[in-house]
Length: 175
Image (cartoon, rainbow, N blue to C red; front, side, top):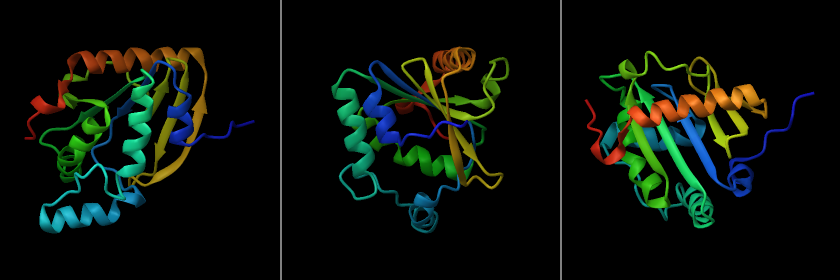
């Protein structure tokens, strides 16, 4: 029987030590970003106001998570030259940092020998995985929860290897 998938707020509110997020796609078509992405494509402007209605819920969640001593890290594996979507994402990452996330970028060519899971994920406290599934076009598909110890070890190992090679956001230059 499949487990119900908790919201991101429930996952992060339940974290005690760490929340690790690995992103491996070069483009996402998440419904909540459609307008902001279209605006960026037409004007080059991206919302970097942590208090905006778009960002506020995420910023508040991450801030309260970090305030409890939980380390929140996000690593992104990207192809180079980067896609337009990654350019957009990179421009808005200052908000993730302002909220308290640590963010790094790894060029895909430097990840060839890392054993990676087949899907993006959140790993909470080294034991609870929230698999993020997407359609072929990049739209969000229903997520999945797992507490399988072998899968958690794979996620932790993959994240640690990516993190060790990745470039901190402030040093990563888009090419």
